[in-house]
Amino acid sequence: MSTFILAFVFFLAMVFAMGIGYLVQKKSIAGSCGGLGALGIDKACDCPEPCDRKQARLDREAARQKKIAEWKDNQIM
Image (cartoon, rainbow, N blue to C red):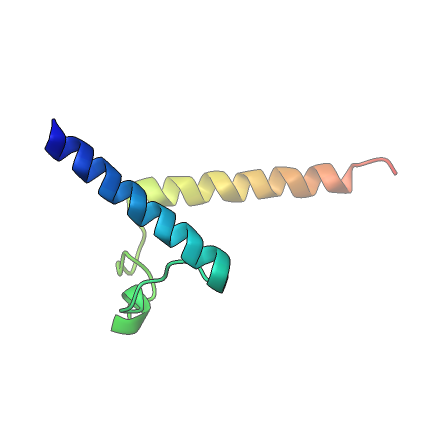
């Protein structure tokens, strides 16, 4: 039980220290490697064509945007 309490206090102290660091520097935590952009990858999926699930999601979003555009055209102002 003492190990758990010690670990909890340690993590609590780290969160407190990061909070103080944020208040002092006003900078958020950032990765050091630059992410996928550093590797020359524009997106997580490098497929030339989207998969079925993504294509369905894109189709739904396009239909939604079309309905919004029609609604704005027919809006009474």
